[in-house]
Image 1 (spheres, rainbow, N blue to C red):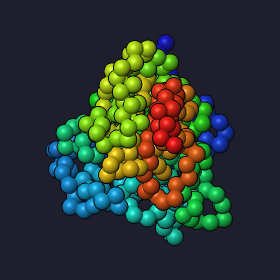
Image 2: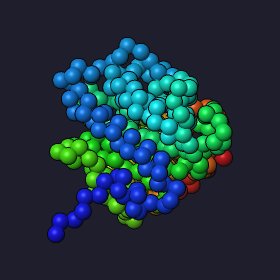
Image 3: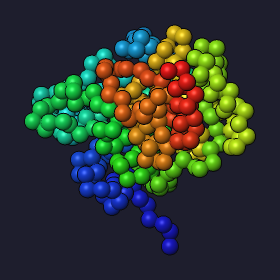
Image 4: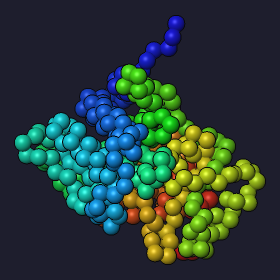
Amino acid sequence: MSSPLITIERFLLSQQPEYAKGDLTTLFYDIALAAKMIATQTRRAALLDVLGYEGTTNIQGERQRKLDVYADDIMFKLNDHTGRLCAMVSEERDDWIRIPENYSKGHYVMVYDPLDGSSNIDTNVTIGTIFGIFRVLDDGNRGRLEDCLRCGRDLVAAGYIIYGTSTMFVYSAGAGVHGFTLDPEIGEFLLTHENMRFPENPAYYSLNFGSYRSWEPEVQQYGDWLQTITEPRLSQRYIGSLVADFHRNLLYGGVYGYPGEVNLPNGKIRLLYEAGPLAFLAEHAGGYGSNGKMSLLDIKPDGLHQRTQVFIGNRSLVEKAEEFIRKQD
């Protein structure tokens, strides 16, 4: 007898804690639908003339690509009217997103990077979507800035979608990290990776050594250590797409690092909707995320688009980064 086909919805309803059921289950399904639409556009980007730049910039000062704008628009339009969210935050928008008054508000806040690694779009390199979900602080309000500016410890769920040779949806609602692969023939995400964990023996380190001269001396020493250790012996793999580098290291073990640089003292990764959700996933997969001095999950953002240094992956490798970096204090 063939094994049962287990969808995200079925898995949540049968395997997850009670708080992850109901509206949160349906919210995952809404995100999965957005992922299918974005995946379709990325597969046919050159044919649909959605490669290249839109002609606008986002709050980060980054030029927006056409697929950035499309992905952000889809995430918004599929979630603004459902009655499951009371607020959203997107990398592509200056301010937090209010739910229109003509729609009922829900119990959750979603923060997201609609298209991580978008600088790789035109060269057909793996990209992704990152999201985190908080429960609203006060159900009596429609949503406020303070509902959005939360530390990662407050997340009730987080995940990412990776658009590569196949499209995968990886999430945690607090009871393990689970991966679903899109079957394009039936248009559904099916369970393929249950209870994902960082392997005990890591294989890779993922840092951009092209920026080595711009790192602090302690980070350079950590980079040197990664290249010379023999137990375990690590290989360098760096794609430059956060989702792709994190996903590979989750499967095979390793550490991803984006430290501060001369012109970017706090690094490039955004705390609220990139580092926090991935650190949540890492911890539920037996790993750890740090800014070099403390857990990323314990940092409360001062602003929606605050940046942070990031070291994330196998706990032993991340704690070694902290050991080097704390020497500068």
